[in-house]
Length: 464
Image (cartoon, rainbow, N blue to C red; front, side):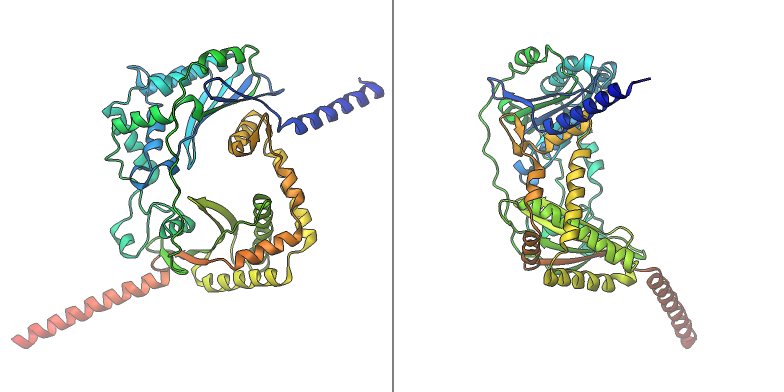
């Protein structure tokens, strides 16, 4: 049994360690290799495991609508196999190392994600390099990868959806609005014209050392720096292609639209979407805190006070050069008008009276706490570094808590009023018919058929 003195010493040590780990989260061992490849290394106390993220700076934004899926297609192909054993053989090699891997193509990057035992971290990196640069891009593999992407993207709009002005390719109202404004592609790439030559050109131009960042977090091998210098240092750099200029909003979109998302149903989705303006140096923290405030205000109003929506949400999203702030709720189709009125009234009241300072402080504390608990463990920390690369400089990531602490209620009030002056788009997603409408339509069809039969019978009798 521990003595009181030793117990106090242990508790003090634990508290000090926890404080040091939390304070040290933003500091990493970061440096570029001679070929321009950026390394971000973070040793942790989590033994036996390493999280790896290899970020290649090419994504959807670098291609026009006709070639938008090119980096995504290459991402899939790089898991198709490095020898005659194909994809199965490649996967078995990673399984033999006790690891797991995946990849993601986003607007600005393609990232390869590995979770591996610490003992096999260098072997896993060797396998990743083989997949990136030794994979043969033959027609059979390309066709198979295209089939996977078609399945992931979902079906093209059916004829009835096109007729009613809807699009199956847009999985939410904001995405469809972005397409209307010329910020996103109206339809997914057909993939048919994406060739092996285009894929090889993409790999040779963009998969170069000076366009890569390697993030490693966990129980790092003491021999890792020498290994990285040797293996990743031998990757060739290259001249970077010019970045594609992102499209600007045309500003041409209907302020109020109903989108048909099915044939029959009793629920609808309501969206109020605003073009998000720039509010200065504290832009990110301001919109994050305002989003949290409106999330609580909308939840309290629509669900707790009026029972209109179970899980209303407030979201931020970016498309090309623009960003959007949306308020969303799924409601009964008969409650659409009431819900929209309540949202407009709520926003008007908050804009007129201002936000409650005590609520702002409470939600600020939640946001600060969330920043700590969402970056616990090697995997979460590696993902945090991946998502925050724009805020990295000389071995440190910027502290997001600092910005949150600087945002005052008056700034949130100003941002909300500025938001409410922006272009507002109202979107309602609902099925074509409700259950009642279906019954009425069916009855009308039956009645018309009966009338037609009676009329035909009378016509035939009249000819006798």
